[in-house]
Image 1: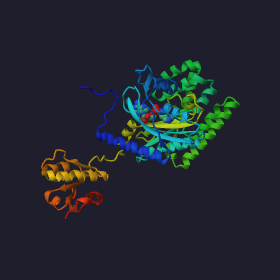
Image 2: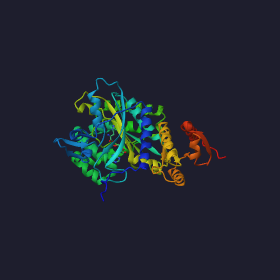
Image 3: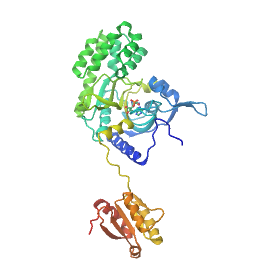
Image 4: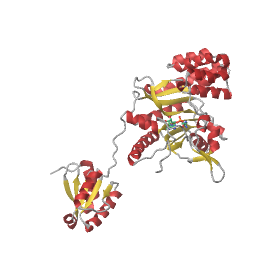
Length: 450
Ligand code: HAM
């Protein structure tokens, strides 16, 4: 017996129904915020990811050489492809560009709780807007995707951080460029790594000062108030140049927090410099959304969503520099979250109508009725093998249909059909020509039993 590959999922109809529900809520939230849908290829040149996504994703690529000798990879994320699409038309696109997509991504990760080798992501991205208004708009759509399921600040939180502040902290300590990127990679794993191991990884960058640096990291990560954070950063500034940059940054933080407050989103947002983001291209505000732990303070499980500003990716692909901010929200962690919080509605996967026909002549009329009911958008089924009347009624009950349309010999002779409400047992005889309209009314209002 052949089994499916580890980390991949089969979607039975009930799984698809659940997935469709999640996608529908996401797409409605994105559209309500003015985002338009785009799409990209599943297979891309390997280089797009090796150059642009950063070492963590590169180690997880599904890549191979195609029959034309090209090095290719299944997309592990959508962002580099999207940046290429926007870059290619950046001169003519109306700004800001606000686009969304829901698509499958492939990452060769160790399958574990909340992590698979194939997952779907909603992505929303805004291009061409440098100010924090775009970051606020993006956070708003991200939170709307959770609120659309009825999730509130008692269920989840958005941890807001800033790569620029981290780079300024490193600059103040004399670390810039590639070294800074490596240190940020270490900081990103800080929460999941033993302290001794983190110190070992930091030593090549800081030597004897690594304990000092780690102290700064821990202090920065512990800050939860805007005022405290501003004071901490100001206390670092070793020269006028960095001091100026820190002041500018603090001003942008104030603007972003003000906008989020005006949008009534503050209850979801927590300042938390513990978020650094593993991907290489982020350049400014970054965030991740987590389910709250039962104590309401800490976080449980893997991130529900993550994103931030990446102003240099379009430029790095060879196009004119274009500001960008976006996030990805995954279906695996989201489905777990919604199930745990009981926010998934019962899945109704039954037909509306089941047609029961007495014999051959009635069956011909039944097939015509099925076509007309279906053309009217009414989900209609009938028994494909035409068993006896009693068996057909049993099948109608098992199907979960709310209404049976019965085409018996007497009814057909009179040009009628009988509608039977399978919940109340109520019945009504109607002319064949009016069955779709009568069925629609009966589905909306039911038929009382006599
Ligand atoms: P990411 O943080 O790698 O960001 O992924 C975003 C979300 O996708 C995660 O928070 C998680 O819910 C889900 N996810 C990621 N990997 C897996 C996996 N192996 N199994 C299940 N779920 C997973 C990005 O991908 C960025 N490209 C997002 C972005 C868009 N940034 C700017 N625009």
